[in-house]
Amino acid sequence: MFIRSTGQYQLTYGSGPGFARVREGTNDMLNTPPFPQEPEKPSSKRKAQAASPLNFCIILSKDGRIDRQIDRPLEEYLAAIPAASIAWIDYSTKDDAKEIEQLAQIAGFTKLPIPKLSTGFYSAYEDYDTELGIMLPSVTIKNDTMTVHPLFVLIRENFILTVHSEDINRLLRFSRYAQPFFKRISAMCTCDKITMMLERIIDENNDRNFEYLREIEAHGDAISKSLIEEKVAKKHIAHKIYQMKHILIDYLNVLWATKDVINSLQYGDADLITNDEKLLGRIGILSDNIERHIELSEQMSNVLASGLEVMQSIYNNQLQSLNNRFALVTAYLTVLGTAFLVPNTIATIAGSGIMEGHMAAQWWYLPLLVISTVVATAVSFVWVLHVWKSRKDEA
Image (spheres, rainbow, N blue to C red):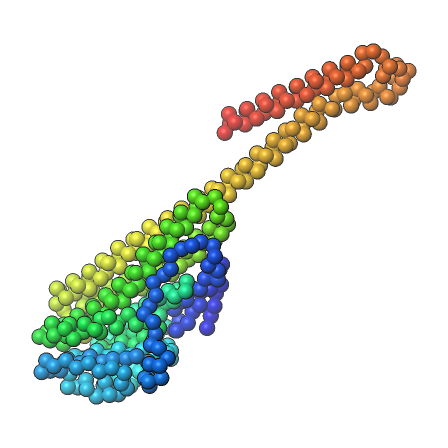
């Protein structure tokens, strides 16, 4: 595992190359709203009862009957597929990077290069005519930790296999409504069914990813509000803005990676995908949604960048104010130094023996020192005012 530190966050690459986890070191700078959480994992009691992580299979038989099976071995799901019109198997693993290749072999995917599929940068698309492999990024944020998990979608003949980490359960909601969904597509041909299922799976994954953009915007708004609060340390705000912008960049990478996969599917070039323009248009809608969220993310990035510019302006103003203070002190010292320079010179001459050492005893000696001091102070003060005025005119 490779870890790269960035300020108070750590960018950890795990669960297969190209996947990142961003962890915040401290959370006491600003009171920002919490990120939404994924559904809680099964309890320890339930884990003890189940021999494997949560999984399910939904089968549409050729006679129109729909069967739902939960928490069974993968081999038992596969045994029912030959008699099915279409089947969807969702399997969660503890280490998807290591178990995905084994699960693909058990499911009969012999053409797909699983290592190549799992090493893409956030996403991957592999089409081998009778087999189609897709990797999508799934974002989760827990306890101020941003993690990008891979969601594998493997398609062969009449069934779809989705494999993901047990830390994400975003397809469970769709699985609850999968039976009526299967009824609606039961009259379609196999490639149309596969396309509709794939479009719905991608849409469910995108919806969960989009939710975190709203939370990122809420955090950015809290940071913007803190800029006008005098009691908040500006140095902490600058770090917070940079960290937020870093998370946003990773989020943009997730959106672009998802869009690459959708663009590959949009034209129906794969043999397993339909050629129906109407169904392909539904995939095009997914691409449009991604583009809108990319625009929102880029606008958010510009807002955060402007926040950094504001912080830089604040620092420059503080430095300029400090420089003006030093200039004012220097001017006062110049006036005082010049004021005492002339009488000091006269006193030095008087003590050097001129007028046989009786110059200091003359009645005009003391008035001379006072007058010279006043004149020197006035001349130096007028000169300093003239210099400052000329600088202001130049500015």
